[in-house]
Length: 69
Image (cartoon, rainbow, N blue to C red; front, side, top):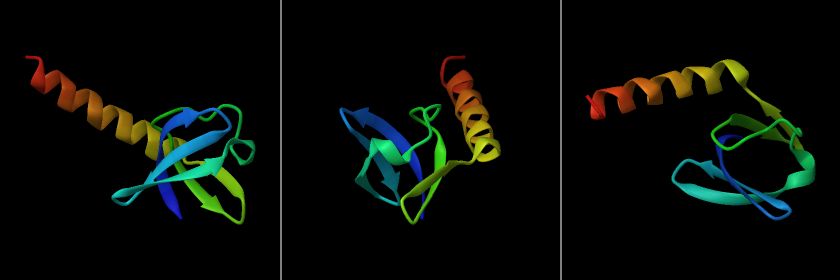
């Protein structure tokens, strides 16, 4: 399943998947994972999709620039 890391809470990572959030054990995430990263979770293994994360961050940056102009 694919989602976006929303936040870290203690030993849990809250991931937004669709329109809901699900808590996962922090231990299955790479140490470099941060809020906003696009991730794939499969069989208690998490991979960060770096290209998709960067694309999403750029899109958000463009939207924020438009709002504050």
